[in-house]
Image (cartoon, rainbow, N blue to C red; front, side, top):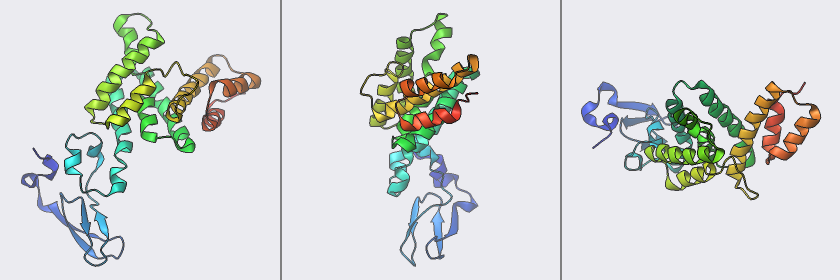
Length: 243
C-alpha cells in the first residue's frame, strides 16, 4: 500500500515542477514524490519545497516513505510528534475546556523551560500535554481519584496515544516514566522530569495566587521549595504576578 499523496495514479498536472537551487539559483526539476534532488550545477542536495513532512510524525509508513530525507529533517520527526499528541489530548477531553486549558498552559511553560535547561523538547512537551490525561476518571467514577489513580490512567492512555502515533519506543518509554509518578517526584529525577514538574508547579502557583494572592515572602518561599530548575524559577517570576 502506498501513501495516496505519493501514488502517481492520483497525480495532477502540477506533479512535476521546477524550483530554484538555494545555493546557486539553477532550476531543479522535482517530481512530487521526490523528497530530495541533487542540483546538477553545484551538487547540493535540495529538499523538495512542496512536500509536507508533517505526516512523518504519525504515519506507519514513514520510515519507508521518508527514508531518503536528510538527517536534519529526520531529526525533527520527534518535534513534530508533540503537535499530534496535543491534538489527541484535545480530542480526548472534547469539550472539557478546563482540562484542555490546563494541559495547554503547562505545555507552554514547559516549552519555555526545556530549551533553556537543555532538556529533550519532544519528551518534555509530550509529557506536559499528557500529564492530566487521566482527569476524566473523576467523571467516569463520579468520585475524586487519587493522584496515584491519575498517574496510572495517564500511563495507560499515554501509551495508547503514543503507540497509536507510532512514536519511537525509547521516546514513548521516557514519557511514560515521567507520567508514572509526575505528582510524586523523588530526590533524583531526570532533567526532562524536572522540566515537566516545574511547568505543572507554575500552573498551580498561578491558580493559587488568583484565589489567595501571595505575599512577596510567600512567593519567594514557593520559588525556592517547589521548583527545581533555574529556568522554571525565572518563568514563574514572569508568569505569577505578585502585587
